[in-house]
Amino acid sequence: MPSQPVAGGNPALQKFRVPTIVQPLHNSIPPELLPRYDPVYVAYYNAFNAGRLHTHEIPIEEFRKNPARYTISYGRAPGPDIFRITEQKCPVDGGEITIRIFEPAPQLDDQGQPKRRAAYVNFHGGGWVFGGLAYDHDFCKRVVHGLDGDLVAFDVDYRLAPEHKYPIPVNDCWTAFNWIRSHKATEFHLDPDRFAVGGASAGGQLSAVISHLCRDANIPLRLQILTVPVTDLHRVFTPEGEFDREGCPYESYREMEFAPALPAARMAYFHRQFLGVPRPAESNEDWKISPILAPTFQNLAPALVSTAELDPLRDEGEAYAAKLQAAGVSVEIDRIAGAPHLVAGLDGILEGGQRYNEKVIATMKRQLQGMKVQPVNK
Image (tube, rainbow, N blue to C red):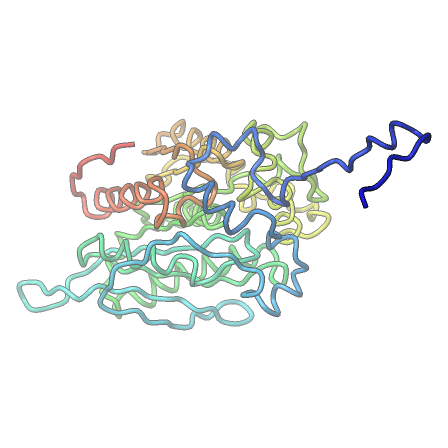
């Protein structure tokens, strides 16, 4: 039988319906930023990242036990096949680290002797906390292939924070650079006057520091490849490792505070893990933490500084490039439009990542081989 209407009662309660309430997914792209991103990135991010935890939201002890459980990886283009990939152990203070070596086939001169080759030393990103030799494996293959047999790439597996806080990652990279140049030049037929360094994010910070150290030690360096680099931790974060929204001198940090790939909270986490809480007082003027505070920029190696439009690190990277230019250093600045912080690792899906690869190889040819190459269109 059909239900009979009930007389009386509260008419408002009779009409009440439970409302539909929808909240944005955790770590979703802020709606005000959404139209600015490359739509290909948006599609991939929404499919694989939105609603999931960032790795900095996982207790580091849990992450270290099972990284594969929490890691999300996609978008890297496979690198071309090259002649040989091997690994060696490099001694460092308190232990040893792995160096992965990417070689082209040897080329012989008129006397039948192997020709000397340029060297590229790579430092991976990951906020000094995450990352490893898998990060840039395909990129190292790509640059070796792109230099037509005239370059050996060395990828440095430096020790990570918080287990190995600053200055250990910096010291490991400097030790590795000198070990390659001083102890491996003969074995790999390297030209010690044709070295380059590079890396993305934290790897860009490490590369910038190594470039200063090379200049200070009178070691020739042909090129520094600084990709979405961290250059200033002191003026962005409080000594306790909190984002200083009001005092931060870089508008891109406020603009991209909740950017999906690298929100300010993630960078603050990296600051705390890398430096400790609070940041040691003696580090307050240490330019090897914030290379933008280095006392001089004169006579540094030529630089390719690549930034991403939708990256909180954009402005500090470009400010660092401006300091290089003001000191008379040859600098090429390339801001990649519509791109997130991770653009260099998304060359399998984003045009910006593919163009970045082309730009790096063209710049390497020009600086390491003295070749004139056609400019890469933006």
